[in-house]
Image (cartoon, rainbow, N blue to C red):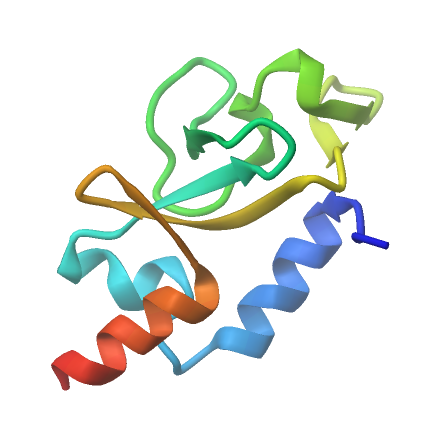
Amino acid sequence: MAQTLTLNTLAADNRFFSGTGGVSQENQHCGFLPGFLDQDTGVVYLSRWADGRLAPFHALDGLPDHLVLARGSTGRVMAVKASVIAGFVRGGCFYTREQAACCLDRTH
């Protein structure tokens, strides 16, 4: 069963992929933008702040309401559907963290 995407799972993924190119600060120079894929629908969303501006890393607050499972007391998104995975968008294509890391490994 897929794990619900939360702020904690995003932080854990960042730690796991640190140094591999699978995190935003390590792959933006190659044109990767943080994004999300809803595996149920195939729809890709760029990471955005709640006001719609592009976010420089994976931010849950800009995801549409139909993906949101839980919000904190201030309205901040705390969890989204388990079908949503974090990854990156480059050239109109979605890359998982693993795929992005693999792309960077080939360019160094």
